Figure 1 (cartoon, helix red, strand yellow):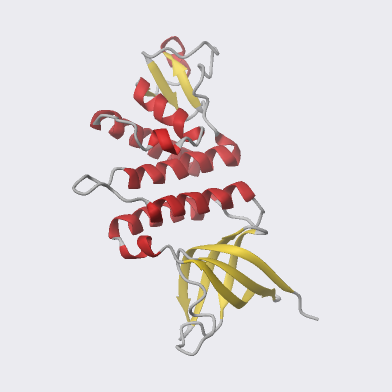
Figure 2 (cartoon, rainbow, N blue to C red):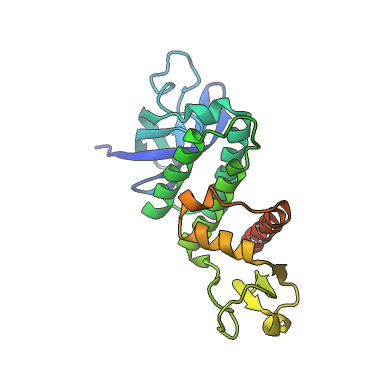
Length: 244
């Protein structure tokens, strides 16, 4: 007897194959990351077609075959319409999906990751930028997802005290060390001379992100220089972890 498995799934990648088939990479509430095969889904008559697509949150049902999981049913929960129709939001959604693709490789249930995906995509979908203002909070949501994913996976950086001597962080002369996994003070700089000089604005942003305090974070006024520095540190830590 064939066993049917049911779960909620977020689609972060799709790949067309053969004439009408499609493979979906999904992150699920009950099983973690899965690769699911959808037979003939690209045909107009497919009953699966309306229930699942890129960046959908869906209720799915699948069976486990000898070599792959095959989708047998899909019902749309949330389409995230505003992300699909906005080029700026869609670009950020793609960057978030790349984080999932690069960091989550095996099938392992993780409710925290699933909830974070749902939270960030809901925020991105619903966020309305003030008219005439730059969409600064779109990329901020990308970094919010990145740093909280890193924390959930066990690589949360130390930002409350020096990661070497454990002294309290002061507002000046601090560095971020990818190798040591957090902030280090000036006197410990010799422990990693490749560490990046950072300022109090960057530390403030990291603290708010890791506390998941989006309400304050989204209203925080940070100058262009500090924003650029934060982005550079985020990208470098991301690349460092991927290289490991």
